[in-house]
Each structure stands twice: as structure tokens, then as C-alpha cells.
Amino acid sequence: MLPLAAPGLVTAGLLTAFFMWNEFLLAVTLTSSASAFTVPVAVNNFQASQLFEIPLGTISAASVVITIPLVVLVIIFQKRIVAGMTAGAVKG
Image (cartoon, one colour):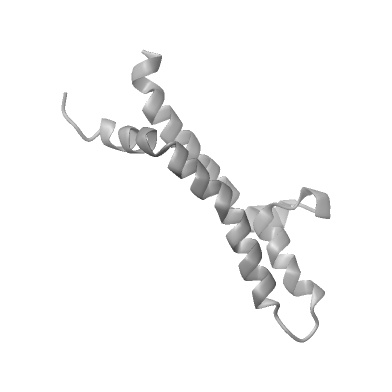
């Protein structure tokens, strides 16, 4: 049964990981130390270090760098993601 459920489990796991990776409000609310910050919260703190300007270049570069692992995971698991999303849509 596990080989049949593998595409759905991989898809659910990856989508959950993506949603948790991008979670901002919960991470801002529940973390108190800088070592526990998630990546979006750390990028948001770039603004706090500047007094009168927003470092758009730094924030943009950090956004690209933190997006790269997600894109690599999607490319690696693309077949399983598509199989998991279409497994429940087809009558068998």
C-alpha cells in the first residue's frame, strides 16, 4: 500500500514544508530570540537595521537566495508532485 500512497505523501509533505517555510505571522509571534527566527522573519529584520531607508537590494537578494532550495526541491520531486495531485482526480 505504501508504494501507491508515496506520490500523495510526498506531495503533502512538500506542500506542508513550503507553507511552513513561508510562514511569517506565527514565526514573528512565537519566536523571541534571533537564533530561532525563520528565514522570512530574518529578512524582515533587515529593515529594522536601517533607520531611514529600506534596503531593497539586500531584501531582494535574500529572497532569491532563500527561494533557490524550494525551486530545487520542486524540480527534483516534480514527477511525484504531479502524480500525487492527479492520483485522486482520476477514476480507476
